[in-house]
Image (cartoon, rainbow, N blue to C red; front, side, top):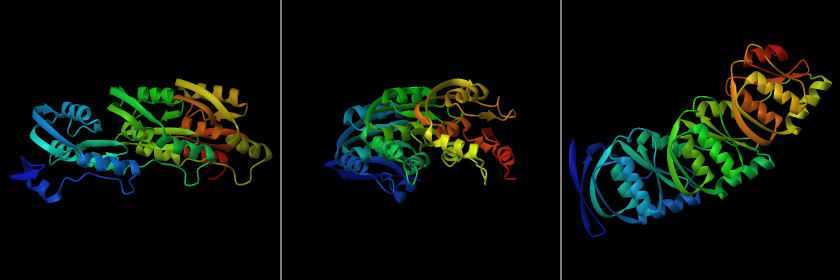
Length: 340
């Protein structure tokens, strides 16, 4: 069922076709439960900023780009739900939030993510608005500084169907921060995002997308599929209940050693051999997994513990067994440490 709603806005009469479900549910902007002052400021701005819009069978991405240029507000199309949509709309003097909501239509939604206004499928927008940064409850000083930087550092980015690995490499080079892509599942995922004066937190959330997540791990910012990032974030070294003297020293080395390294599609075996040499400690990869992974990452002054978490990724784990640092699957590692 469809009906026409006539609304008086800023002295103009606007006629728009709406579905009954849209009228019942409303098309309010999605906001995080705990919105930041920046998000509240954006909400105020988009509700107050009047725009005129004349669209005739216009691709939604073109309409988003036009509105971004017209309003000076970061507006981003997310997901694929609306990407093929074409909009026909003639309105005058409506708020920017209303214009974007009308463009989204009954099957879409818009929401505030940092200092960006996002438009896309309702489920996609809801997922992105609800996504949060994974960070330690009791962060170390370096992690706390990194979290603070996320909201202080502002950058301009323009990605046009850019692979995630290239985005991560660009952001790492631009910000001089350790930014790492977790897992292989998102390497070839492509993003189209254009932002001006956006906080780094906003850029990372939009780059991660609806299926991804971002986390602070040691002194690194990590992006990837949500489950992969969550797995690496929660990973800890497996250690014996009664460690030997050499094993206690190895545990200390995990926290104390700081290293710079760069791997580009490096086989796990070669990465372990190189890491053993520069860390100057006994490090062994289980033969069953030594050929299973290729490592791509660049980090500076990262702890050995953080590096091993990133090298293992979501699939493997690391720990101390028989006086060496040992990498294997979770089950095989437990057997080596003596937990089974």
